[in-house]
Length: 389
Ligand SMILES: *Cc1c(COP(=O)(O)O)cnc(C)c1O
Image (cartoon, rainbow, N blue to C red; front, top):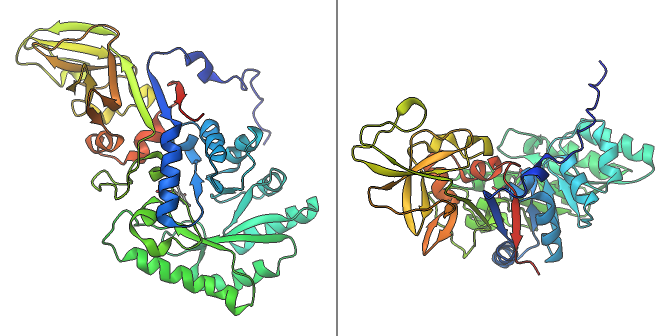
């Protein structure tokens, strides 16, 4: 099967045409640097900052560059193309591609100086063959499965896997790691069990008389709530952005949210009592009331699940979202006496006049996790960056 022909405009960055849009994301680079320092001090070990999925919506390249500038030890991404984008932007710190790899990618990973997750004996052989063909050693992290049942060799089968990797002529073992399934549940015994399984697997290095590579296990939850999982390196994602993994758990550390999402009032009207608002007529005022329209919707990644559930900040007041969220707009009720003008600032995530709407609040209202709120904010929304000099 031949690949589809490449469209001549495929390289065009479609997001460019949205740069002037008044609806925007603001990323506070100083908050990111503060969070990195705070998390590193808490863990007492180096940090691999996780910047997959467009740096959790914050912008892969600006965030990767800034973290490098403020001294992050390593970066973690999900797949090859994210690592290549960072390398092409001049990022030189070690980068681990954490996802499973496909055979043809091994050569590219090595050529872009990306550390490879080796998650099975088969993948080890693929990487060795690519490295030998290039005449260049591959930098690898071995992936052990201790309870996710995702990629990785089961801890109980780790012996022969580690032995083969240690014997490999073409792989440098830079790390060994696993991933926690329930680290956002501070009371769950699952994490301690995963840690035990992981340490048992790591012990094969000692048995073989091979040097112990960097051992890492802790995501944000592990870092925040399970100190024994810190080991030699921590891999925070969401906490680095100042957001908690679970909306119900307060942060034990003084982290600062790096992202705010803001728009402006684009329309004001009085909706008479009894007149339903938006698609499906799911919300109807029982008094004459004032309703504003805000130009952002589920086509931007603002969840439709917030229909008649979420809130926004306008002129220092919390105002409920009313009716269904549309693709590009939604409405909020500012009440019979509320005041708002066209172009007034509307805060969807962030602070205004001493009030705050956190990403965690939005996630709770939408019935999802903060991760999904952040990564769904798509490239129709321009990003601007403050601080960082
Ligand atoms: C996404 C990811 C992380 C970061 O997880 P957070 O919960 O955002 O801290 C760490 N390790 C791996 C393997 C991941 O896929």
